[in-house]
Amino acid sequence: EPEVTQTPSHQVTQMGQEVILRCVPISNHLYFYWYRQILGQKVEFLVSFYNNEISEKSEIFDDQFSVERPDGSNFTLKIRSTKLEDSAMYFCASSDPQGRLGTEAFFGQGTRLTVV
Amino acid sequence: DAKTTQPPSMDCAEGRAANLPCNHSTISGNEYVYWYRQIHSQGPQYIIHGLKNNETNEMASLIITEDRKSSTLILPHATLRDTAVYYCIVRSYNAGNNRKLIWGLGTSLAVNP
Image 1 (cartoon, chains in turn brown, green):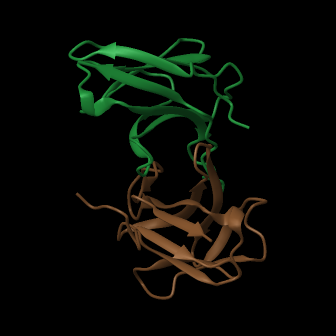
Image 2 (cartoon, helix red, strand yellow):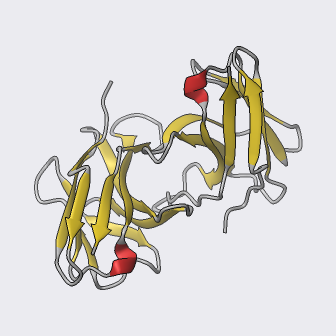
Image 3 (cartoon, each protein chain N blue to C red):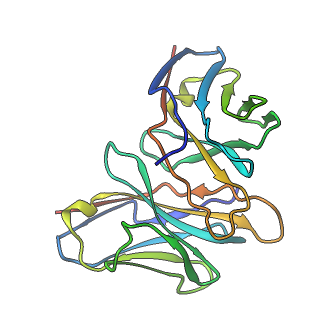
C-alpha cells in the first residue's frame, strides 16, 4: 500500500540553525501538507501546497518557514533559524489522488525535531 | 478551533465493540465527518469519513445521526492495537484549496485485556 515517507525520523539541531525536513508524498497525490505537534498538545496545521504553490498557511507558518517541491517526488519544509519552541513532531501528509475522488489525507510517521 | 466535542477518554475490553461518540452540532450541509487515530505519537491514520449515510470499511463503522449533529465511530472487535487517540474532524469535502484539518484533543481509547 502506498505511504508517505519522512526523513529523518529524528533531528537534533542547535538554536539558530537551519533545518530541512523531507517528505515523499504518495506518488499520484496532488495536495501536500505539513502539520506539527508539540509534545502533549494538539496537531496543528502549518501549510498546504497545490500546483507548485502554497494554497493555505496558518499563523504559525511565518517567514522562518518555507516549503518546496524541488523535484517530482520530494516535498520539503525548511525552518531558517530554529527556535527552542520549534521543537515538535512534524508530520507530512498528502491527499487527492489524480483522476479520482478522495480528499482524505494520509500522513507520514513524522520527524521529531529537537532544538537545543 | 475544532468544531467537534469528544470525551477525553474511554475504556473498552478487548474483543468488545468500542463506540466513540462525537458531537458536531454546528456542522453545515457541505461538511463531512472524518475520523483519524494516532497511536502513541505516530502519524495520524485515516479511518473513515461520511456525510449523512452510515459508512463501513475494513477498519470501522461510522453512524451519523439523522440531524447530523453527532456521530459514533464503532470498532466492532477492539484489540490491544486499537489503543490510540481518536479524532473526529468536520471539514468541507470539496473545499477548493481549503483542505486543512482542524484537530481537537480527541478521545484517548484504552483497550484492556
